Each structure stands twice: as C-alpha cells, then as structure tokens.
Length: 392
Image (cartoon, rainbow, N blue to C red):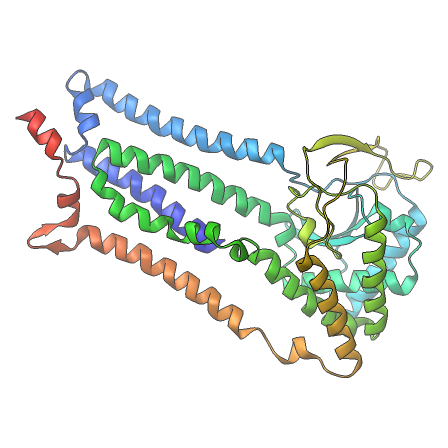
C-alpha cells in the first residue's frame, strides 16, 4: 500500500506547489484572468476550488465506508462457559509463546471462525458467536487460538483492521490527485501532465494486474502457513491443527448467513469464507437468547449481510486450505519448511517496488528544476502561448 499511497500523496502536494508557484510567477492564466476583475475574489475562488476538491474526496471516501462493512460487530450474548473455555485456551498458548494474553472478543460474524485484529492500539483476538455454539473440543480451541496468537507474534494482525483504512486512504488520495491534476493542467498548462502522469504509474499497475490487487491477502495467506507452523510448535500436535482446519472448512460450508464480499476482513479469518453477490442489507443477528451478556447487557446485534445464493468458492481460497493441510502433514514428517526457508523473493519484490516509487518521485523533481539549454523544464512547461497572445 505504501507504493500506492506515497506517489499519490506526493502528487497532491506537487500539484498544490505547482499551482502556488504558477500564481506567484503570474503563469496561472485562470488566476490572472480573475485577478483582472478582483484579486481578492481570485484568491477566494482558488481557495474555494481547493476546498471543494478536498470535500469531494472526503465525500467519496465516506460513501465508500458506508457501503462497506468497516468494523467488527461485538456479539454481547453468548455461552459464558464456552467463552471462558476459549479464553483459557488462549491464555495457555499465550504463556507457551511467552506473551501476555490479548483481549478475547466475541464477534457477531455469522461463521464458525476466529481472527486476530487490532483492538484499539493493542492486539486482540476474536472468536465468533457461531464458534461458541459449535461444540469444539478443548484441543480444537487451543489449535485455533494458537494460530491467532501466532499471527500476533508475527505482527501482521493489524491487517484485518487496517487494510480497509489503507484502501480508503488510497481511494481518497487518488480522487484528490485526479482533481488536482485536472486543475493544474487546465489552469496552468497541459504540458505539466508529463510530470504528473508518472505518479499514477504504481496505481495503474495495481489496477491493471488482478494478481497485485490480491497481493495483501496473498501475503496474509502465506503468513497463514507460517502461523500454522508456529501454532504446531506451540500445541505440539500438527495433526490436531490440520483436522481443526478441515472441520471448520466443512462447518463454514453449512453456515446459512454469509459475509458480503465487500467486507474487508473476510480474507483474514481463520478459514476464508465464501463470498456473496447482491446488495448489502442490515439484518439482526441473534445470539444465544438465554445466555448472559459479555461485558454488560445489550440488545441483539445489527450486522450487514446479503441473503441469497452464495458464489462458489474460488480456487484460490480452496488452495490455501490444501496448502495449509499439506504444510502440517510435512511438519508431522519433521519438515519445518516455513521456518527453514524464509520468503526472500517476496522481500526482494517489496524493496524493488519501494525503490521504483522513490526513483519516480526523484526523477519528477529533478526533471522540473534541472536547466536544459539554459532554461528549466518548469519554464518550458508553463509557457502558455494562448495566454501570451491574449496579453498582447
């Protein structure tokens, strides 16, 4: 996400600097035209346009947030005995890893599942209300909690809570940068596109390549293998963890309520859920009616989901489960592949992408200010022939 956010943010700042410098040098024909009538009005109009563009970007992001499931919904009614059993399992594996037990939440996600996420500024683990009703054994609970505590130890638990924030930030910056680019090219000169368009390159690459769009979840799926490996060491029973994965996969197929594909966290669950097509609706999700509330009394929880027929599982989702099972079987044979062979290739691609973004930004800056035939590219690009003819 940094490879997308950095050039977009740089583009917004560069566009603003271009506009200010052009106005100061008298090269913004739009501002100069308005100044002939009233300079104060021209300044206010320019500020008003910038505020309007910022408002449009914010409005677009807010609209996107409303359409997406952006938070975890706490289920306040659950079986207290089962909750305490999961909590005890979590405390056990946490001690085994030498960590303080994170907070355990019961989530109103309609599937037998668990997830590691960011609870405020600290890591947290969520177990779904459906998992509390599934009658899982003590060893299966420990296997689930060991996997999630491993994600926390790896430091990638924040993705489930923060990935949507990165996506919204990228979308908002993209809208704002596009509007600023149009303003700069119209108000100053179209030649400035030569310097602004390269900053869109990382975003265009991501949008054009469907594989890169799934990169965050692919990386998380890879970390699932590593988390399984750590969990297998914690519980000393890789076979149990493998059977737990298979069991939850089967149970997830039987769950009637499904998660909409717009939910940003569905790819970070212990078992990836199927997607659902159609419009999102708000419905009431009922917990165990006779159970006591965790953390106080509350009514039934409202969550988003889509009624209808589910889509077939993607081959990628199924392949991740098969890969995890194969990894655990290899561990049973004494082959700890994920611990023995770190993913150096992925790190190389990450640093290469960041380096490419840095090079693009540096080239754009130097291309504007380095003299060419005694004249800077900025001077060439902002020479508006039409405006010169009008002034003559």
